[in-house]
Image 1 (cartoon, helix red, strand yellow):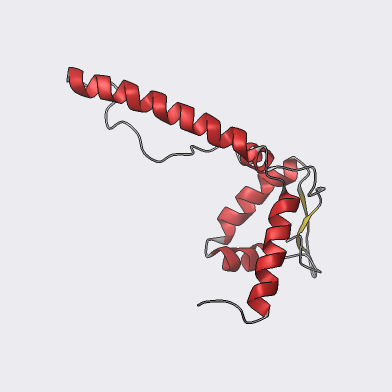
Image 2: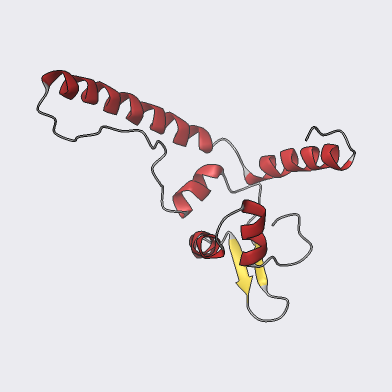
Length: 133
């Protein structure tokens, strides 16, 4: 969106992401509440980036979309009767919590401007014909 010269519709963004436009609108609504994106209605309307890419981090975005669960793995049963399973679950839960905390902390170190620069480099390489598909 930051590289588009015009607002992008939910349908266009969904096409880029290979997902449903409703999901895109729901996600962007959370970002709009934080002032990271804006939207316009009617002909020529759509979504635009309104944030300073230097100031917004991936952690900011993660929090704006509701801080979803990072890892899909987890315990099958919250209160197993098997003592071995209980001990393993406790160890895994602790490891997952530590890993999630580290990942979320690292998200604070990546700005949207850095992602934009990486995109620009990849896009330039892709447009130059130096890609493998």
